[in-house]
Amino acid sequence: MTFDKLESPREYCGLCGVSGAANPLEAIYLGLHSQQHRGQEAAGIMVGVEGDCRLHRDNGLVDDVFHSLPADWRQAAITHAIGHVRYSTAGGSSVVNAQPLMADLAGELVGVAHNGTLCNSVWLRRKLQEEGAIFQTSSDTELLLHLLARGLRKHHNGDLWNALEAALRELRGAYSLLLMTRSHWAAIRDPLGFRPLCLGRFPDGGWMSASETIAFDVAGARFEREVEPGEIVVVDGRGDLESRRFAPVKRRAHCIFEHVYFARPGSYVFGDSVYEARKEMGRQLARECPADVDLIVPVPDSGVFAAFGFAEQSGIPLDMGLTRNHYVGRTFIDPGSHVSRGKMATRKLQPIGEALRGKRICLIEDSIVRGSTSRARIRAIRETGAREVHMRVSCPPHRHGCYFGIDFPQRESLLANQAEFSEMADILHLDSLGYLSRDGMLGCVKAYRPQDYCCACFDGDYPVRPEGL
Ligand code: SF4
Image 1 (cartoon, helix red, strand yellow):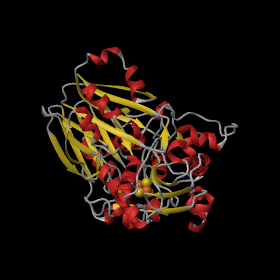
Image 2 (cartoon, rainbow, N blue to C red; image 1 turned 30 degrees about the vertical axis):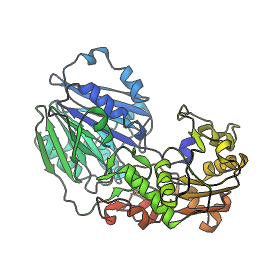
Image 3 (spheres, rainbow, N blue to C red; image 1 turned 180 degrees about the vertical axis):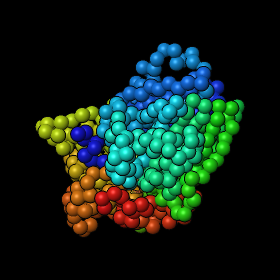
Image 4 (cartoon, protein in one colour; image 1 turned 45 degrees about the horizontal axis):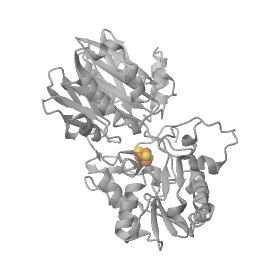
């Protein structure tokens, strides 16, 4: 078990698809690399070359996986490609679960890359197994391949796109998908649009798809539009694009936590700039929960932009009183080891005494999950000589699990479920604690109505009923 897994929500997956780019391999590398924050366990790429498909995937970061690409890929005439960065929210972290997954479906090579978590995967897996399906992985994604194979065989007479539409109608939950064959690739979003997925265009006419628009900026494409919930966008080898619908949009459930924590500030997600939304959350937090302090201190990295907003709104100076060690990866630390909580907390973020000593400070944090890292960090800050330590959090308290692709610890271990709000500041050794309200948070995004966002980890109102709840 990793330290990070114990203490904070985990990223999940990032997607990138390309065709018609001057250098598809470079474009997909840049697109995946810019989305590395969405998954660091494994990466993979599937390419179309001269009417055939090739796949390369492995555990590790994008750079590691691309360094081990077969040498002849660099000279290959690649027409289209899909890629994936993975953190396992469902399925283990073994390399067999790295994506894209590729299968030969009665002569049609099909690859799939998935971001999200299905809510009916246990039921679907059992049903398919009863029908004779044999699974090679423990990931949700393989379910789609089995549903496709069954549909092609039984109902759709080899028509992949009709079989795909029928298969998608059997899935419940969160899925943004890229699918690829020898001649086409497709970008797909679930009918509620939980996870982001966008389309971009290269200046010479090629297409790109990515979870976050920052991939377009880095790879030289221009944002065109979001893939709509319930839509399949099919791109062929010539760059022609066809939009198909497999479900109507009755309501939306965009994950608000993308704006709070996950997405990169340089991205647009669900039509809003993450930078603007995050900064506005800081401003709104300052309006709702002001703090009488000398200094605003962000908790890097995701608290930084909310802290800028809080400082701007309150007129209180901001300083980087915590510095991040960028060379701390997701190192395995034995839970039974004797490394103290304090050392663990300061391993990643070190307080700077010169910035904090003698001051009343307000930390700006993006979320509190279990609270144990925050508590140890606050103790370390007090040891530098800070006079008062307050904290403001740029989202509401986390009280519920996520079943749509974000990995929170068990509900019972979330701090907001373990203590009354009035006790939490004491537990964390804080002089005061304040959270942004749900309505305040939703007021910081503009492109869609408040009811178009999922807030289930805050309010328990699940847009799709998870299995077993
Ligand atoms: S439950 Fe929370 S993290 Fe999960 S999709 Fe909804 S808002 Fe996002």
